[in-house]
Each structure stands twice: as structure tokens, then as C-alpha cells.
Length: 188
Image 1 (cartoon, rainbow, N blue to C red):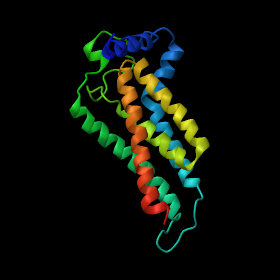
Image 2: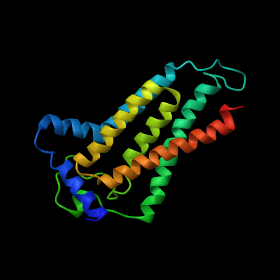
Image 3: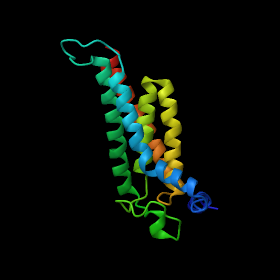
């Protein structure tokens, strides 16, 4: 059995659960489409009330460390999007609902590109970047990111390989930005 067949089989197992329970379908749709936005809102609320450092002459309003927290999250997400964009040129794969008969719960997304999952890459970059600064909130975000990834398969818009690649891209982006920030800003 090759990996593409395994990917398709796992997709169909997860996607076949859709359409059987209205509650599960609504939860899947919420996780696939809206949870990412809720996580960003939670992050920004947490960031606003975060007290990291005192303001200084060079870092008015909130202080240096608080701004670095925000910039590292934004840059991790941006890097994940850039890497996904570049990967999509290396390998194009149409969404499952375009290439085969599946249960599609969220309609036709903006893009027909399936590989890699942008939602998953972004939410994992966000989750790990948050985890670097706040372990408790980071764990909640990482668990939520897993729900986003699985829901993208469940709702019929991504294959498991798209999700796994998105996870790796998101984690790599957050790690790279963290290492850059540690080297340039935080150790000073």
C-alpha cells in the first residue's frame, strides 16, 4: 500500500463520520472554520492584559518584552503562510471535494489548493509561538490546533497529508522565529 492510498483511506474514515450527527457536524464546522479566529481573539485579549515589562523610552506603551511576544507570533504566522505558499508551487493537490465524492460540510472554500493546509499551519504556528511565552495557554492552543486539523479533514476540505504538512510547517515557522528572537532580541 502506498502513502497516497493510505492518505485517502484515512481521509475517508474521518470524513465518513460527517453527516451522521448534527451536533458533531456543527462542532466540526466550528473547529474547521471559526476556531482559528477565536484563538486569535483570545491571544490578543491575553496579550493586552499581559504585564511583561514596564514601558521605557525606547519601548513606550507596554515595554519591550510584550511587543516581542506580539511580533514573534505575527512573524511565525507570516512565515508559516509564506512556506505554505512556496510548498503549494512544489506540489499542487486539489481539495478532496473536487477530486472525489466526499461529504463537504463547509461549501467551497476560497482556494482549490489542498496541500498544505493553511489553516493548520497558521494555527500551529500561533499555538507554538504562544506556548513559548505561556505554557498553560499554549497547551490549550495546541489542543485546539489539533481540533482544527482534524476538523479540516472531517468537513471534507483537506487530506491527512495536508494537515500533517501544515502542522510541520506551523511548528517549524514558530521555532525558527523563536530562535531568531532569542538570538537577536531576548538574550541582549
